[in-house]
Every structure is written in structure tokens, then in C-alpha cells.
Length: 113
Image 1: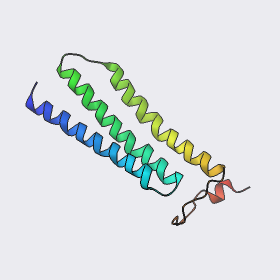
Image 2: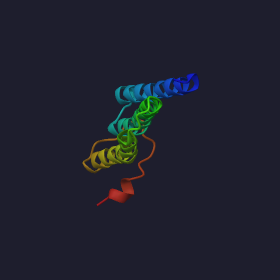
Image 3: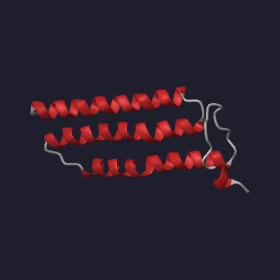
């Protein structure tokens, strides 16, 4: 395998592990469900996508082109941020309180009865 491609694969894996680790730390450290869903929806998606892209590149250099990996990347790209949005909206509508450090509530006038 070419040294440049190996370097790109290693860099993509390191970036993916960094964002996935950042997401895990965010899930533990952030104060409320809204911040946690943001951490899970954004950084975990980017982390998993870059690891899967590195996997695709690795197998492509071996002569195996697997379109299922590309479809999985597309599926995660479309569904993970949307699911975190739906979790946070349903938490808001069911009355889960905001963190005490929250500055503004942009959804308050939208969901007032």
C-alpha cells in the first residue's frame, strides 16, 4: 500500500477517534439533555463518518470497493443529527428543565399554549 494513502487513513482514524472521544466526554460533562444531544448529534456523527471513510479507503486500496460503507456514511449523515434534534425537541415539549446556565430560550414563544 502506498505510504501517502496509509498516512491519510491514519489521519482520518485519528480525527474520528478524537471526535468520538470528544462526544463521549460531552455526554458525561455537559449539564442538560439539550447540550448532550448536541454533543452526540454533531461530534459523534463526524467521528463515525471519518472512521468509516478511512475503512472505505483501506478496503479500496486492497481492491475491494464496498458501496455499503458509502451508503452507511450517507445514512448516518442524514439520520444522526435529525434524531438528536427530535430527542431534544421531545425533551423540551415534555418539560425537561433547561440548565441553570442557559441564557436564552428561543423555543419558549413557539411552544407556548
